[in-house]
Length: 334
Image (cartoon, rainbow, N blue to C red; front, side, top):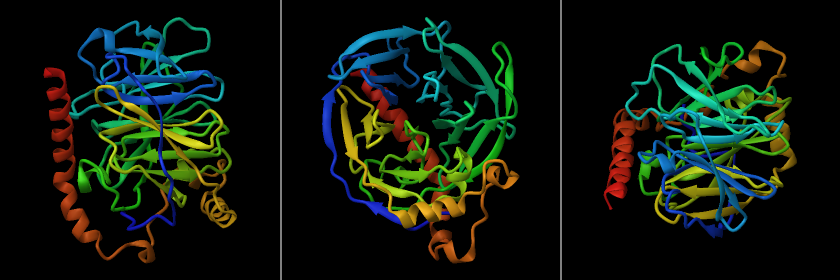
C-alpha cells in the first residue's frame, strides 16, 4: 500500500553542521551520533582503507578507525543499542545474490566487532535500513519499492553460525513530491533508519524524506506497521542514505554519499498530543501476537492512484539500482 500523504508533515530548515574532508569517507551509508561526535561507515567500498568503522569528532574530523576482523560485504547502516553496543548492518545486496546477510556487533570496550550471519526465509533482498529493538533484536527493513519487508531473527544470534530471519511485517512510506536526484524512484525506497536515544521514536528515510514513527511499549515493528508517520522533507540531498538522531534526540542528522559530504541537521518539531494518541491507539501492546504482524490496509486508506503507481514500481528498483551503481563507479574512476 502507498499513502499519498503523511498524516502530519513537518516543515523544517536544514543547517550544515560540518564537512567531512577525509577522502576515505566517500560512500557514507550509516551514521550515529554520540556525546562526543559521530560514528560512520561506508557501504561496499573497494578499498580496504575505506572498509572501517570511523569515529568522528564534533568537527567531522576522523579521530580513529576500527577495522573488521574479516572483509564485510556491504555495510549499509549503523545503530547504537540501549546498552551502548554498536551494530553495523552488513545487509546491502544490489544484485540480490547473497545467501546470507549479517550484522557486526561492537560491544563497549571491545577492540573488534563480531560477525553474526542471518538468512532470509524467502530469497535474497537488498536492504539499507537497520533498527535495534529495546530487547537488542536487529530489525532489517528492505529497500523494496512500494512495500518494504521487515525482518527479525527467529532466535538468538549465533557467532559462527547463521540465524534464520522471519518476515515480521511490511511498511510503505507515504508518497510525497519532495525533490531528489532520483525523482519518483527516490521517494519510494528506504535507504536508512535510526532510533531515538530514549527509544520512543524511530525514523525511516528515503532519498527524499524522513518519516518518524512513535514507538509504544518498545515495539518497533508495531510502530512501523501500524503507526502514523510524521514527514520531514530532506529535499535535494545529493544521494542521501544515512540518517541519525542527535544525541539529545531533538533533531535528525543526514549525510550523503560522495566526496566531502556535508553533515546536515534538521530540527524536529514536537509531536502533537493527538498524533501521539493516534499512534498509541494504533500500536497493539508489545506482548500480543498482533504487535508483530502487519496491519491490513483499509479501503478508506487506499488511494485511487495506487494502480497507476504500482504499474511504475516494476522498473523503479532496477532504474534506481543502476543509477546508484553508475554514480559509484563514476566516482571511483575519478
